[in-house]
Length: 369
Image (cartoon, rainbow, N blue to C red):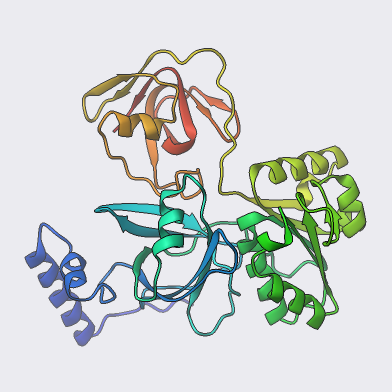
């Protein structure tokens, strides 16, 4: 039986008043005016205030965020889009919460690696302070733990890819999960391992949790050395064929694990999340032209992604992660052939929705921008 929800008189009046205020605020949204008074008071926009900043390694910063009332929580392994204004321009990037999904304080914990060419990550690493207000999206993504929880889990991470799988580990511990959990993390050296003390404490306090640290540039210490291979898999999880594996890390680690699982015929046991697309080579020289039909702009094909080419042509299409994850830049390709730089697949279908940030044109392409 379904029960219809009927708005009462008070709720109807509040909705009418809100609509009236928003109409009076035209051409800007009401939140654009409220943020001039206090950025954390919003009607519709979701924002978050930085309440704590920690720097546990030389190139990472951990931010604890307090979202506004619109926040709906997250599932371990999902990601959020974070927006920050730098020199008057709003930039958006994707990050995975590292805290347990069962956290009761409503806070969101993000650990961000300052990449050498990362505008947003460098800014947050250097400038983030308590009181900074950021734009925040609702959580999204399918890289999540199944229910019921698997009897055996292998969590594999590298570098800043630790955050979504750490969220999974913290969630499983909070749930008092009794199945076997092996947490395998790759880093250059021990000094590059974020959350090292907590990882060791979790393993010491939970008999079903096994922590394995693999160092690629440090020969002493740790449990494994060098890069991932079947010998590492055999050493830490000989029961891998009977387990679910969750993987997040840099392209080299992702590629290495996928190749081993493919050779073993167990790709169906592997779940992945990545925040750096691996560029697939485009056959031949870049040629043709890109037509942005809605804007009446045409430019020679430079071979860059369609998002970059649109921006180079003076256009400003919507985007979020710039890595093929959030789908904010999805646009209709009206004609032509494109290649996905993450998969290498080509697409020649007309009137097809594509992601600008991970698509490059192969010859002439027309877009509804």
